[in-house]
Image 1 (cartoon, rainbow, N blue to C red):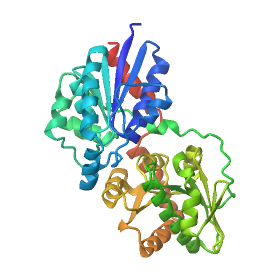
Image 2 (cartoon, one colour):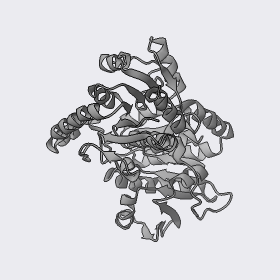
Image 3 (cartoon, one colour):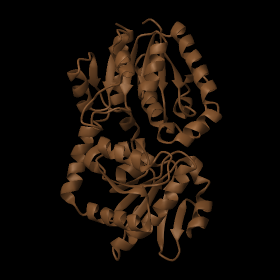
Image 4 (spheres, rainbow, N blue to C red):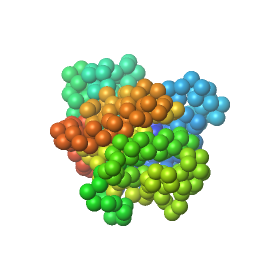
Length: 395
C-alpha cells in the first residue's frame, strides 16, 4: 500500500485528545500512514505522549484557548506573542501542503481555516459545534465556504442531531461517527479505597492551572456542604486531578483549613476526606455516582457514561457561567448548573441539596444514561473516524 502522510490540526486540550485518538487508530490499522500534528492552542501534550511529530512551535497562552470569553485575556495573549505564533503556524500549514496528502481538522472554525490554507483535501470534525446549542445549525460564511469547498471530503459532527441539521442545509458527505474521547475510559484497575454501598462523588476541577487549583478549593467547600446534607449517612469523595495540581495540594489544604498527606485531603473538624488521584481518571469516572464538574471534555465524558453532573462556577477564565450554561445546553438533562456567578455559600448550599436530591431520584438517573447515548454516542468513534479518513486517502 502506498505511503500516505496525514496532517492533524486541532485547537485545544479536548480537541487534541480527540484528534490524537483518531491518529492512533489510523496508525494501528494502516501501517503505510505517517501522521504529523499542528496543535494550534496549548502545548500539544496529547501528541507528544503519542510520539507524534509536531510541525510548528507550541505555546501555552494566558487564556488557555478561551480568549473569546474575556477581552483582557485577548490582550494578554497578544502581549505573550500570539501574532508571531500564529504566523509560524500558518507557515507550517503551507509547508505541509507540499508534503502531505490529507488533512484532518478537529475543533471549530480555526483549525478548519488552517486545513483550507494547506491547499490539500481535508475532513473537518466539528467537535466544538453542535445543533444542541441553539436547536439549529447556521454556520457563518467563513466555515460555510470551507465546508462547501470541493476539497472538503468529509464533514464529521459530535452528535447525530447536528449531522441531521447540517444535511438539511444542503451540505454533502456529513456523518456522525462517535466521539473518540469515549475510547480512553477503559478501567485501569486503580484501588480507589471505596467503601461499599456508600455514594461516591467525583470532583473534576479542570486541567489548566491556576484555575484548576482555585476550582478544587471551591469544591472542597462544597464537599463540606454535601457531607452536612447527607448526615448522618456517609458519602465519599474522589478527585481526578492533573499531575501539575498534585504538587499544590499541601498549599491548597493549608489555605482551606484542611490537612494533606499521601494523596488524601482531610478536614480535621468535620472528619471528611477527599482522596486525590492523578492517574485514575477512568476508574473514578466509571465508578462514581455523581460528578461535581468544573471542566470541559471530562464532563462530556462523564455524560457519555450516563453520569449526572452538578456544576458550580469559579472565576474562570474557562469555567465561567457563560461556559457552564453553554455546556448545559450542549449536554442536556444530565447537567444541572447551580448559580450564575462564582459560587457563594448560598450557592454551595443549593448545590449540596441538588446533589442529595439527584442521587435519590432513580427515574432521573435512568434518563441520564439514555441522554448520554443521545448527546455523546457509543465508544468506538476513533476506529470509525480513522476508517473515514482511510476511505478518502486510499480511494
